[in-house]
Every structure is written in C-alpha cells, then in structure tokens.
Length: 209
Image (tube, rainbow, N blue to C red; front, side, top):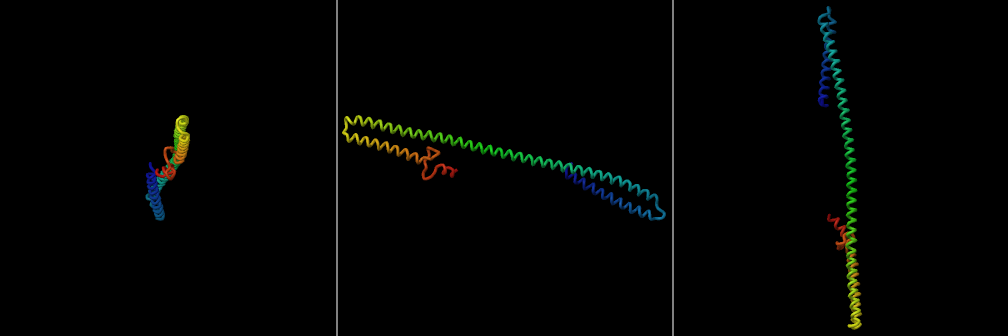
C-alpha cells in the first residue's frame, strides 16, 4: 500500500466512524423518546439496544482499523525518512568522491605541466648548447684559418697585409660573438626556436589560446 492509498483509507474509516457515531446518537435519542412513553414499547426498546450494541462493536472495530492505519502511516513515514537520509548520505559520499577526483585531476594536470616544462627546459638547454657549440666551432675555424694565413703570409705577403688579415679575423670573431649574444637575447626564455618580436612569446601564446 502506497502513502496516497493509505491516506484514502484513512479518510474512509474516519467517514465511517462519523456515520456510526451519528447513528448511535440518533438511536439514543429514539431510545429516550421510547422511555418517556407510557407504556414503554419493550419490543422496540430491545431492538434499539441490540442495534446500539452492534454499533459499539462496529465502532471498536473501526477504531482498531484506524489505529492500524496510523501505525502503517508512521512506518511508511519512518521508511521515507530513512530513505531520504540514505539519499542525503549517498549524495555526500558522491560529493566527497567528486572532490577527491577534482584534486587528483588537479595534481595530474600539475604533474603534466611540470613534466612538460622539464622537457621544454631540457630541449632549450640542448638547443642553446648546440648554438654555442656552433659558434665555438666557427671561431675555431676562423682562428685556424687566421693562424695558417698568419704563418704563410709572413713568408709571402707584406706585413701590412698580414696585420690587416689578423684585424679582419678579430672583427669577424667579435661580430660572431655579438651576433650570438644578440640572438640569445631575442629568443624566448622557454621556447628556444621562437623569437620575441616586441613582446614575450609565451604571454602572446597564452592570449591567443
């Protein structure tokens, strides 16, 4: 039996009890009228008293049914309260699990960004080292060529030409060093193969995403 059915049965039994009480009231009034007559109609008196006793039994039965309905109603309300309490507890558990999952996702995202940054730093250092090595090799080649030019030129070329050759070599080396420093200055501090054109490449990239 559902709660609406229980409420309907409750209304019906209340209506039946009222009808029984109204009938009893009428019979007592009728009995009073009979008792005031002289002589008293004993046969009708006996019938009324018998009917009143039957109504008393009916009324007691109706009150028992009403009490049973009341107990069922309380039981269903308690069951609904318990179900609501369990639902609230389940919602709290789900909320706690969602909160835990959000924290785990946050940690995973942080670890992913951290590893990504470590890879970017490692690549940055590798490319930076390769650039420095390229510059050092270039300087070594120029110095080697200058040394050969100086040794051979002293024997076959005038001294002024040798001095000019040495000066040109020094200038080339200085220009290469200046170019390397300027190139490093213009590069992004995270992405080695990106250049900053009037702004930070990382910030520009974040704005466009």
